[in-house]
Image 1 (cartoon, rainbow, N blue to C red):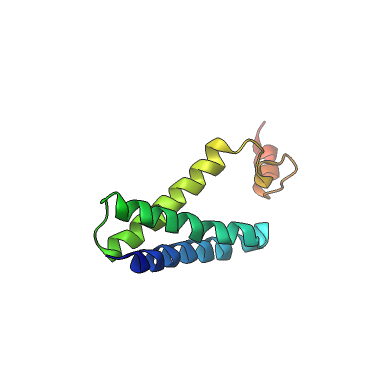
Image 2: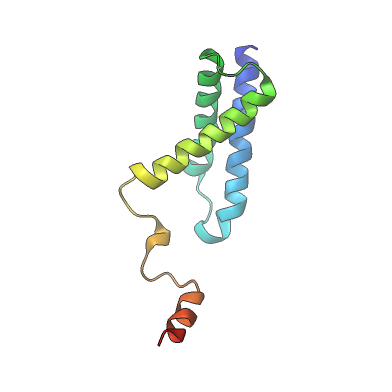
Amino acid sequence: MNALGTLIMGLFAGIFTATAGALKDIRYEGFSRRKFIRSPIIAVIWAFLGLYAFIVQDYFVLLGFSAGMERLTVEIWKGFVRKKPSKFNSKNRDTGWIKEDAKKIP
């Protein structure tokens, strides 16, 4: 395995996760270039760490490793490290079902 193959696999994993995340959340959050670019960068970093730490020795496994570690890194950052709350933690957020459940409680 060489550096060019590792770069390509990391970019592919990052672009795939970024595209899937954008397609999933674009209706609720809008599109953010900064968030979209973040995933390929983190995936490439994990791909090189996986290759040079001798954890991964196959391109297909490297693809899954870098995509999985990218997701793990971003979700840990969003869930535990970042101090400001997400826009979904707002008290004014109307999901539609809260009002209906509140009416059923005696």
